[in-house]
Amino acid sequence: MKDLQTLLQNVDELLNTPGEVPPPSPVSAANAQAETTDELLPALQKYFGYADFRAGQREVVEKILNGENILASFPTGYGKSLCYQLPALMLPGVTVIVSPLISLMKDQVDALREQKIYAVALLNSSLSWEEYRAELERLERGEIKLLYIAPERFRSRRFLNLLNSHQISLFVIDEAHCISQWGHDFRPSYLALRDAIRELHPSSIALFTATATPDVQKDILNHLEIQPPQVFTRGIERPNLKFSVCEVSMEAEKYTLLDEYLQQRGGKGIVYAGRRRETEEIASYLKQRGHRVDFYHAGRDGSERKRVQDRFFNDGSDGLDLVVATNAFGMGIDKSDIRYIIHWTMTGTLEQYYQEAGRAGRDGKTAHCILFYCPDDRGLHEWFTKESAPNKPDLLKLLKLIETFPSVGNFRMFAVEDLELNDFNADKIRVGISYLEKLGFLRRLYNVPSRLSVRTRLFESSLTEEIIDESQKVLLRHLHSQSKLNVLDFCRGLNLRPDQLMEQLIDLQSAEYLRYWGTEDLLLIELLEDSDLFDSMSADQMGFEDYLRIKNRQIDQIVFYALAEGCRGRLVREYFGETIEVDYRCGSCDRCDPNLRLVPLNEENDNANIQ
Image 1 (tube, helix red, strand yellow):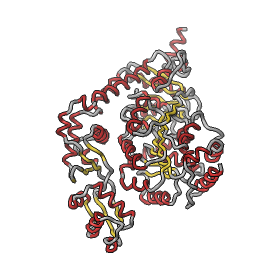
Image 2: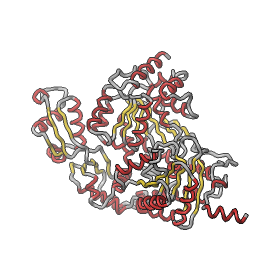
Image 3: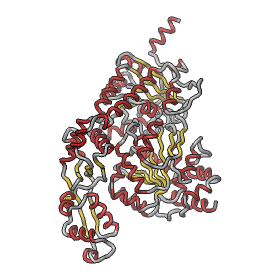
């Protein structure tokens, strides 16, 4: 008990001092867990101001403090971030948190600092070079306990080496469903996390998600190849959310339905549409009808998107009541009092629908989640699935193109823009490379700079030092004669692999024999098999049919939800793997409560006249 009390006192000093402070005492995870039975609640109250945990949170925290791997599936807004933030503050060393969006990271960091917890930092592309260096210096001084990182950072050899010099007590993957290609939000950048975990050897790994089916959970664990974790599932039911579906026969009906609903409804809301053009058309229509509304999609200028978001958060007379958006808006939007979310277009998966709808009512008050369903929606998603799915001609073209890029042995270096010039969009590039990697035709390594600036120091004495090996001395001789170099040409001249060059440079810089600068702007790919072998493979061998089958099954499920004659809540809970009582009814959907059914006002009046 005394060890943990000492640790908490030291951590308290660290968290509440923005400047330089000593690191906490090295109490092991196992020792910390052994003492936590009586200390968890005081720590929770001290750092977060809560009197007690929500159901399931304490068990997760205790497992993490015990050094065990966990996978936790908690509903949106349930407080999963606390499950890793609290143990991060109590454990020695650094906790790394991987998150997919800058806005998500920034919100969590800002919230912690508002709690006077300053031992936190984020590293992503939003930082200037000076800000980035300042955060790294804080890390080196031991001032950081929670380090938020974008997944793309783990493609940097230099960055991994930097992390390797620190004790990583906990490695957290937020939105872990992004790892699975069967998840609704697959992100190829998450695939690099397996190798990062292998290299960093964290004491424990914690995976968090709100929307992972049993199949997706299995795929996550298979990819990461970690020891089977403890799996915690809180269930996804949120009784304050009221779900309903309104079936229409044509698109035009949606405009009338939406306007009539909004005339009755107060509070803030989001309307999700499938296409950018639709968001603009719907917003224009609603403006003409007198609603305070604007549209949001990735095609708008960054300053305009920020203005829309700021006005949505503004509850005054200058604020917006409603944003019509693509799914580019929402994740990372931490607004608790959203009263309704309407899906103008059916989503492609039930996971995506439930995650987006779950952004409503995070304050625990009643909120409405409405899906407009038109039979044409299914055909649209089937077409999109077919168009976006990996296929042999596109993958063969991509592989052959990669083979043509400048090489050092089996390694190819190129920029994403080089592929875009050859009719590949960014999504097809990311998915295509990850699919070829999965099939064993290539291996993506860390990003490398195309050009480097180098300044050597202590040159004469370094050549006689025994602490560097002969290969490093040879490299220093060549680097000493030039201050700027083309990485590809330099590697060819020395018959040196680009990844080996970067490792040598990092080692020499760490030993203070040189300094180097360069933007890691090139993909480094190692070709493992040639395109002739790929050309001889069948579609079955490549798994294309499995991919399409699973994607179409996901479409079937969201259509089944839209057309369900029974309890919608039951269907959703069973889809996410919950065991439900035979006579269960959620009481929060339009099948359980007819008062939730959305119909046009004129239809309601007609019904009243008939009665």
